[in-house]
Length: 148
Ligand code: DQA
Image (cartoon, rainbow, N blue to C red; front, side, top):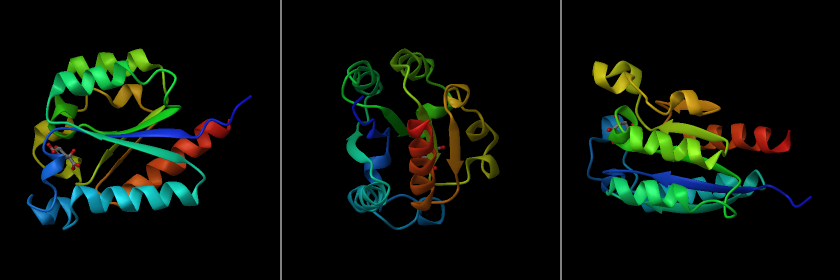
């Protein structure tokens, strides 16, 4: 059987604005810098990454639709969509792929509406409040899952 090591890293709405957003929640890094860190963490774990970001919910959904045959797992930070997008929830379910939900900030310690995640039950794990390190942790969970 071929090696399963392809991880799609998906960022949603407003995450292209990292670097301009409140650094006390999101850190100082821009998305491109964050992606470099994720890439090197993935390399160290023997995982291959592909990156996607959009501010358009339908594009996020369609990207999930098109993953079949191109990804073995997903690490996703849908931003605010996490808290209410049943469209993204349903598209994630459709992929049938193992997924880990990541948030740079500690969503459970912020406004009550950020504590809701409509994708949580579909994910094998969730990492929040650990900044860029959270993605490393997510990739470790994915690696364990893909090795099973
Ligand atoms: C976020 C948390 C969300 O509540 C927020 O809307 C974001 C980013 C995070 O990474 O901490 O845009 O997903």
